[in-house]
Amino acid sequence: VLNRYTYASTLSHLRRTNTPIGRDGKIAKPRQLHNTHWGLVCPAETPEGQACGLVKNLSLMCYVTVGTPGFPLIDFMRQRGMDLLEEYDPVINPRATKVFLNGTWVGVHRNAGHLADTLRSLRRKGLLSFEVTIIRDVRDREIRVFTDAGRVCRPLFVVDNRPESTNKGSLILDQTHLAKLAGDQDMLQNLEGVSEEE
Image 1: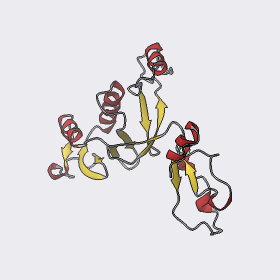
Image 2: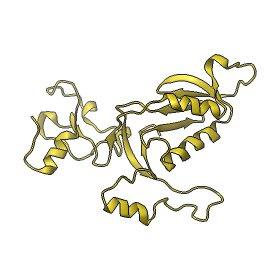
Image 3: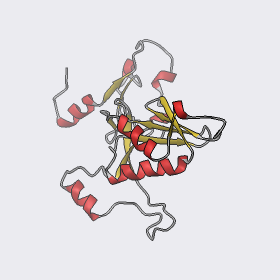
Image 4: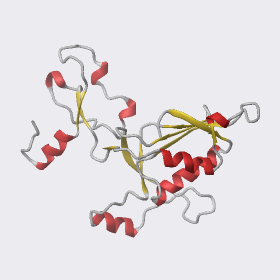
């Protein structure tokens, strides 16, 4: 039953997560906060007693993605030089980077850094949904793009790191964003939702 005593208790109840193991167990590991929960799970809010650490709450700023279609991204990446998996010949380009969309290997790309930067800039401009997760794994030579529902993300401010920029090292945040925030409008265009892998 949804707790409606106060507005804060309602929000807390809606953000509750439950670990589905027995409450009477003495194992401490499931009750502890894992390092990957940083920014996603509140480290302090948990009940006392048998449910301590098994019932956790999402952080106030994190959210669960609702999902967006991923097929337009395949066409976009093909126009930007991605070879589909069926067309790829490993003899011609053995150092190509694998491209995954929602966990499915869809193709390979020769210039992974440029593709990842292009996708991130489109997300920052609002042309891609802010829920799209773009992960570039240099060591494994992979780009993983996620658009599916059910991922827990947290907001992240973007720092301008372009070498030619006069504002290098500064936040990409200005008075218009603050005015939108004060007006309770959507300012997620220049913020990014970041999953734990990104």
